[in-house]
Length: 435
Image 1: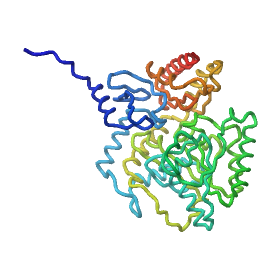
Image 2 (image 1 turned 135 degrees about the vertical axis):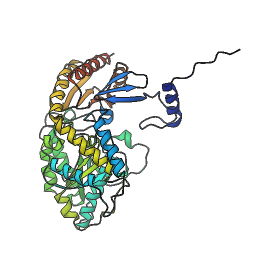
Image 3 (image 1 turned 90 degrees about the horizontal axis):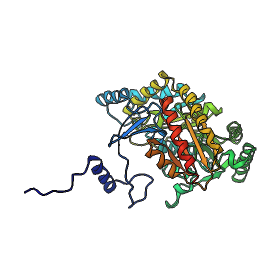
Image 4 (image 1 turned 30 degrees about the vertical axis):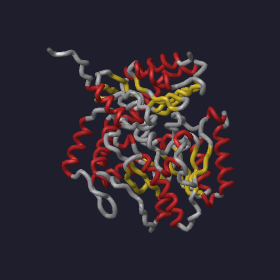
C-alpha cells in the first residue's frame, strides 16, 4: 500500500531554498537570508520570475540596461566572439580587435579632450584606476605630495579599497576598518540642503577646503554629474562650470564618474554634455554593455597624459580589455544610436516626471526630480521608503528605495504605456506611505 507524502517542492521553492542556504547576496544580513525573488527571463522593460509573474523594471537592476532585456542580437555577438577568441590578457603589448575598436568608438562619442582608454571590468575598478592614475601622474610630474582626493557626501564610487574610500555614504563604509587614506570631504551638492544660493555655498566651501588642505597636496576631485545611489540628485544650477573653474585654477584634476549617467541615461551620451563638464578622466561601466557582459572603461584626457608621460602604469586586472565584453559593447552602442535612445530618454523622462510631479503635494514628499530617465522622489526623512518598494513589487513594478528616496532608472526602451503603469502604481504606494 502506498502512503501519502508531502507534495514535492516546486522548482521555484527548491531554488529559493538553495539560494538561502548557499548564497550571500550583496547588501543583505549575513545569517538572515530573505526570501529571494528568482528571476527567469526579461524582454525590453519587462521581467518574469520563475512562477511566471510579470514586472515592469523601473530600475534596470542597478541602472545598467539602457537597451532593455533579452536582446538576441547581443547574445549572438557574444557567441560569435567566444567562438573566435574568448579571452586573452591585454597586459603589456597584447591586444585584440574588439577592444581596439571599442576604444576608438568611445573617444569618438566622448567630450572633447579625452584621448586614451583604459578598459576595466566594472565601475569600482574604474574609479580605483582613475584615483591611482591621478596620484601617479602628479608623482611622475614632480609633485609626489599631491595625493589628496576631494570627494562629496552622498557620492557613490564603488566598493573597492580606493573607490569605497571616496564613497560618501557612511553606512557603506562602516565596519571595514581603515580604508585608503587621503580623502577629504565636501558637502552634498543638493539644493534642498543648501537653499537658493546652493551653488555659491558649495563653491565657497570648495575654495575654503582647498585653502585649508593646500592646493599643492590635492591630486583630484571625483564626482558624479548627477548623484545616483545618493538619490538621483541633479546639482544646483551653475554648479559644475564653477567647480571646474576652481579646480583648473588650482591644478586639480577632475574625475567624472559617469557609471550611471552615461549612454543615454540623461538624454545624452554622457552626463558631462548636459552640464558642460570638461573632465580630465571619465569612468564608465553599466550601460557600456547594458549589463550583458561585465565591462567598464576609463577615458583619459590630455592633461593627465602630459603629467604621466613616460611613467610606467603598474596596474591592471585579469580581464582588462576582454574581447567578448568589447564586442558586446560595440553592438550595444550601435543599438543606442540606431534606435535613437538618447531622444527617447529625454521624452519619456519628461513624461514620467510630469506623472510623478503631483506627489509633491503630499506632506511627506519633499521633491520629485530627474534628468532624462533617472528620477528620484525624496521623502521627509521620517516616512520609510522600503514599504513603497515592497508594495510596488507586489503590484508588478520594480523600484528602489535608496535612503530617504525612491529612485527610478528604467530601460530606455520602456514604452509609454509601461511608463504610465509604473507611475500609477508608484503614486498609489507613495500616497499610501503617509499612513
